[in-house]
Length: 216
Image (cartoon, rainbow, N blue to C red; front, side, top):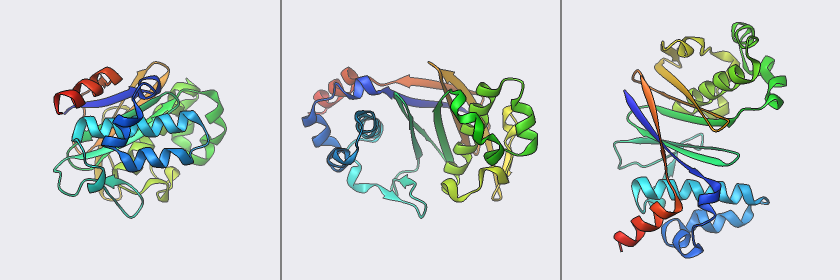
């Protein structure tokens, strides 16, 4: 299965006029004011912009599952959002789907013993930062695909098989995973079909504004 992930840099989100944001994701844009930091506000704007680019004006149609995962009830496709630092990503596909992006950093290493199995902890020793982020983003993508988030203990299941391109079964659901790196960030996607490659599709402010102009 060849998948695409849309992404936007927060600098591009910062170029979007307030009128554009208010017109296409008014609720999210208004809620941005509660965030203390500019980066958080721009991440939220970026998420709204990606959803609009892919699905159009659907903000009022969005629902959330029991654990807070948003979905479109009338769409045959699933989507998943994630953000970290300067980037926001949107994955779109069929069936259970989860995606996660994390900035590669040594600061995360101290929690390895809490979120990884003993076998995973042993595996990451060869390249601690890179392997930590790969394991963690794969675990996050699994938890998000199942719609459980952190209600599912990350140490209760193992994703080493995913690293080798094999599926894992969690909560009676068989999932495949795939990981790529971009600009110092680690991005993982998981779904119910084997993922052989992953294409990143950059979305810019210019593309968003051109789309809005064409659609009137």
